[in-house]
Amino acid sequence: MIRIEGGRRLRGTVRAAGSKNAALPAVMAGLLTSEPVVLENVPHLLDIECALELARALGKEVTWRNSAVVLSGGEALAPEAPEELVGRMRASFLALGPVLARQGEARMPLPGGCALGPRPVDLHLSGLRRLGAEFEVRGGIVWARASRLRGATVYLDFPSVGATEQLLLAGALADGTTTIVNPAREPEVVDLGALLTRMGAPVSWHEDRVTIEGQRELGGAEHRIIPDRIEAGTYLLAGAITRGEVAVAGSRPDHLDALLAKLAEAGVEVESADGVARVRANRRPHGVHVQTLPYPGFPTDLQPPIVAFLTTAQGRSSARETVFPARFSYVGALVRMGAQLQVSGDTVLADGIEVLRGASVDAPDIRAGAALVLAALAAEETTEIRGEEHLSRGYEGLVEKLRALGAEVCAAP
Image (tube, rainbow, N blue to C red; front, top):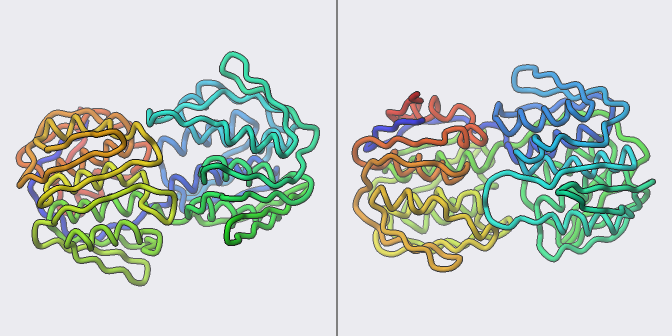
C-alpha cells in the first residue's frame, strides 16, 4: 500500500528512467542471436524482470550490470514459452516471432497483462502468416511452424504497436525484405528498429511504411534505451496538478509534444530544451478536450493521469479513448475522492471541482494507479492506494522520486 498526505506543491527535478515499453521488445530482440546484446538504461521494474525471466526460460543467459542488461548464449532456443510468464504480461507474446524465426516452430500461450478490454493478437498472426507461418490455436496455445520465414508486404488495418514490433522482430531473420504498411510509429517502435539495425537487419522508415532487410544471422549489439515518455509525462502532470513546478531531466521533450500542448492549452506554463521538460502551474487550470490516438497523437497511457489532472480544472473537460476501450477502471476511485466524472461510451466527462479529498482506493492497473497517485498528491488529507504492485510494473523508484519533489508519501504495510 502507498500512503500519500496530499496538498503539497511539488517542486524540483527528477531524472527520467529508461522506457519500459522500449526495453521490453529490446529484450525480445536479444532472442534473435546467440551473440551478446547489451541494453543500457534499462529500468528495474517487475515487467522487465518478467521479460528477462522469459528470456532465461527460452535459453538465454541474462546478467544485470547496474542499469544495463546483457543477453547472451542461447545457441538453440526452447520452442515453448511458460504459460505463467506469458499470462502475466502481454509483451511476452513478442517472443513468438523470434523463436519461430530461429527454431522453425514455437508454442506460445495467448497473452495476459492489464485488463484494458479486447486486445486481440489477430494482427500479429495474420502478419506472420504473410511471412509464411502456419498456425493452430488449441487450448489457449498458439502452435506455429515455418521452415523459413519469407519477406512480404503486410498491411495493418490499425497501426498496432505490438503487431509492428512482432513483424519487425520476425522480419529480421526472414528471407528478403519485409514491408509493413500503416505501421505504428511510437518512439518505442522506432527504438526497436534502431536496435535491429545495429544487430545487422537494416530498418528504414518511409512516409506510410517501414521496411526491414532480413538476414540469415544477426550479430550482437550495444544499445541505449530511450527515456520513458510516459513516466516523464506522469511527473509533469504531478507538478501541474499540485500547482507546483517540476522538471524532468534526461527526457525527450519531442516525445512529449502532445501532452505539453494540452497542458499549455489548459493554462500551464511549459518549457522544453536540452533534454529537460518543465511545467509551472501557478493558478487553477481550465478544462480541455483530450482524444487518445496513435503517435504522434495523445498517448493512451497518459489518458488516466491527465483525467486526474482535469478533475480540478475549471469548467468541463473530456477525454475520449480510441485505443483501449476499457481504460476507465480508475473512474470509480476518483469519484470516491470527490471527482465529478461520468463515463459515456468511449468518453469520460469531468466537471472540475476545487479540491479532491483523500480516500482508500485500489489501483487496478499501471496507469490507473498513476492517476490515483496524482489525485492523492492534490487531495486534502490522506489517501491510501492498494495494488502498488501495478505501479511497480511501470514506475521505477516512484516513492523516492515523489519525495525528492517534496511529496509526503510512504510505502505502508
